[in-house]
Image (cartoon, rainbow, N blue to C red):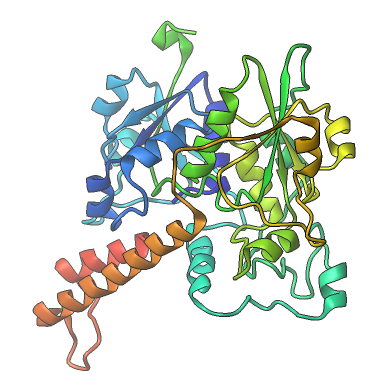
Length: 387
């Protein structure tokens, strides 16, 4: 799956040249080398295309990147993170292009990993919030721009990510609204945004303009794409609620991603021009006037009343600038978690059957051996899939 760390890799890759083509694997390729994907290839194609640094996608890209693939897309070189990726039989997927000198590396984003985020999602099967102190004063005074007593957000439970102003600048468009723009405001948790799409690693193909002779959840992306189409010159401002607010109206151990992570994830989307970090739950007159909002949009999901029981969209409705937008997608954060749990169950069943029907993969003491052959392939596959 992809997260803002991968978006940051795409940002770095785009800065290395003039045109960025991202290869996205098929479901079959991912299942063969990494395990069953959480999202279909069509969902992943749409999500990758929504990342603002991506100029083009290469559907059905092979898992092993070859010179033939680079030449097919007129690419000068390919880019990947500084972590090695292997095939199911343990071979470097970039060996050929590395040997030919057509390989570049970008740095991974510290403090985030797919394994970490999947772990948070799996916690949702338990009836507790990770290390949340129920003391009201603690809830009142613990700020998400600071840290809890254990050096992390108490609302997401697991995060070593440290937000910086420089990182926000790198992700932000830096564009101000222009005369004639329709300023549209949307608000929500935007949890798991751009996480809802990809099983990485995928190959990043990079080309120059000279060689070509030419110039984030899928539900979130579908929604923002529909909102973007409402105006000829849209300027979309996304209001992100603080972790405490999201936890109030979503419950369980939501949000999965904290406010810092959600900020970068939404900023990576090509349809969003600006983000309000820690937006008020109620869309107030002050907010509408400050940002000169001309349209407020919300999806077809239920609107939970504010703490005092009032409608958070009362003011934009009074002004006649509120509009419901149907994304056409039924993919929710809960559904994503269900898919992940299902895939994990399928994996454990396959491993049980593997051991049951391949007794040679057991040591005399009953533990799995880590030697060559089918057992080794299964172990490598499980490690890469984050199981």
